Image (cartoon, rainbow, N blue to C red; front, top):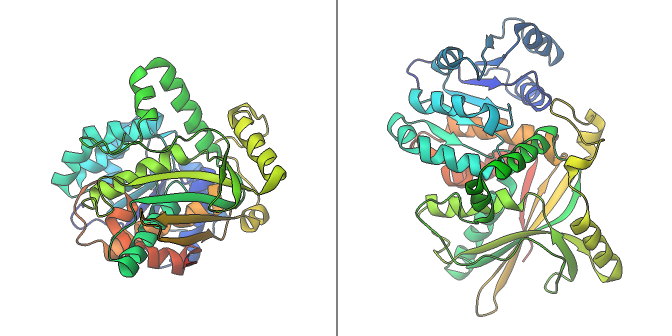
Length: 390
């Protein structure tokens, strides 16, 4: 990281909806942090500073993806940058490049696997050399899922002396909405797939984020299925396409402690009986959220009351070939796309600063970089809980 940086952290994109929530969390929970807000408009940054109750002398930095010099100056002033400016495939690459070159830590909310793979290929070696820790997907996509697998595998090692070769992630309950930024990223990814067949290949490959390694066949992410083990029908989970790939990259980065033959998939549970089946069919057959005119746009989001009423619960079920199994439950206490995500990325950045001194540079995943330290911090400060059900 830059020597003698004046700032610990910069929130880039602080004038956006999620960026404001990150800033609000830092003001409320970390009053002694040396941080700043950045974005394209000084006037809008000043307005957000007042809205979230930040000190009047909080630094404001004008920076734009289209202005390389402004990004170079930005990353030189800070140890780490959180960016909420998506779609990242449209606006993120210059900031990743600047951070990798300068040795500045970078954290985002990306759920765009083809772009992430391009960034791994382009900047992993540079980040290793400079010491920059580049952490993608530091929100609901994919921290609860990566850490849920990590938590269950730790418990398997204690109980059985070996990891599970097979884990299922199953979203059991969910209240809230995906962010407008997530939907914009989805739209940008679909547009890129139309232009480039390589993007299509990467989107279909469960090991697209593990260059040089391809594991065993993974379960299909489509269709309506009865999960007899859990007594519930299930439908595809819309974020499985990014979460599963991050889980496999996490395994690779840790030296494959879960095995080179590890199998993982995610689905959404919809309940038992005919009602559960009908719900699953409705989920599977629902039109793309991009076609919903009421869906949030970038910069829009739910009210504070709606965010605080939101939650999610995800089951992780591990099994062995000889029939042993174990289930863990991960819960989040706010809506996934906004309230929870803003806390997750903020606390991940601060965990990296506080407990990541020995984490080497490179393009990493949060769980592979910080492991149990991140599980503890997010349990204490970000509304996540991890429970072994048996």
